[in-house]
Length: 244
Image 1 (cartoon, helix red, strand yellow):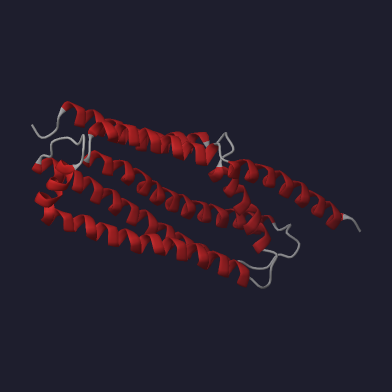
Image 2 (cartoon, one colour; image 1 turned 90 degrees about the horizontal axis):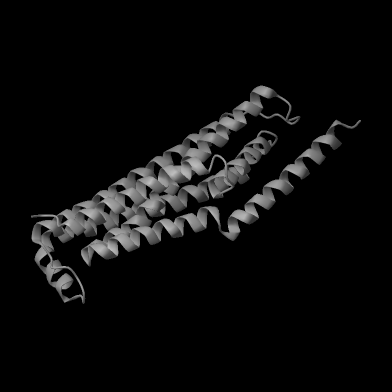
């Protein structure tokens, strides 16, 4: 039998953790302050400010920096994927390495190939996410270039346009986040080569780590406080602008 009962349980736990946490985080972000929710609000403020600027070199530089970071991960993913595919020709040596690890499960030739295929699939998914993120940031560049100047900040059509720009930037960031999440879960998938029990524990640890960082970290508290300060400052500025 290719999969043991423990292997099936470990795989079910792995995919349940990944898919389940993705849906959980997406739903919880709609009602709870987290990194994704706070950053989206900051992007709305950012794009609204962009409409008031005649010179947008700073925005171009910031977006170029974001794209550069994503391009690094995209190219790195291809290198990792090439390394994983190379291991298909070295399965016997890989089995020897696994057998030499204490408390490791007895390697099965076909099962090792399945594990490599799953690992390769994870990095293929990560590559698609990173490249889609890069494309969306490119779309955002075009939208910023096409945006007219509104020094008053009162044109409702242009305010709606700025929110659409923020939405495109938000979707690009989500794709980047999904790509990074693939890296996190690839670390858990590596544990399957050692022992299926370790895959279960690693999957749960990845979910705990992601939850703590996205919902309970000091960065989230700082973003939340910064959002409040930003809204107060913006309201005070708008009131000053309305006074004769």
